Amino acid sequence: MEAYLFLIGLVLIGVIAQNKSLIIAAAFLLIIKAIGLDGRLFPSLQAKGITWGVTLITAAILVPIATGDIGFRELLNSVRGHIGIISFLAGIFVAIIAAHGVGLMKEDPLVTTALLAGTILAVGLFRGVPVGPLIGAGIAALVIGMWDIIVKAISG
Image (cartoon, rainbow, N blue to C red; front, side, top):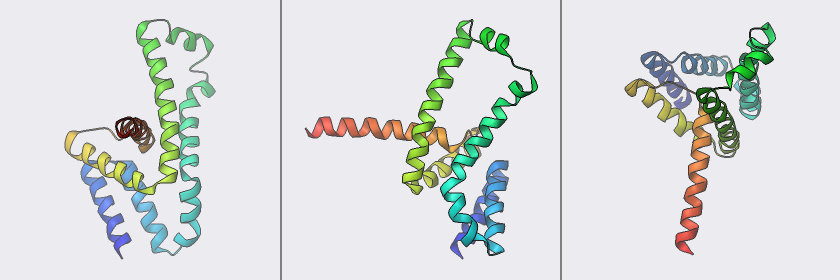
């Protein structure tokens, strides 16, 4: 019963925060659970969902290449100025951080819960943009790693 209430609460928070991704995800899980397919689908979704999501996002990012809107010329022109170079480097940095986030989310499901709570709070109260838990988890992994190094250095 708690799971149903939690998911319904997330749908409501999604509506209040105008977060379509949260609404769709929570409603989808609620429906799957309500029709009794959770035992079959949830394990696969939990084990492979992040990979499926990253694949779908990657495909969406590659659509302009597939349609011919972005070619080699546009790619080369995009990194000629300082804004393009900074954006290029930021893309590399974010992708590396997100990779660490995937590992952290897989090893500790509570990370996802905390990230979701933080994202909901930021979207609802601070007009934040829900950029996704991978980046948040990656940043968390980076900070946790730095924290561990500092604690080890202090404790000797």
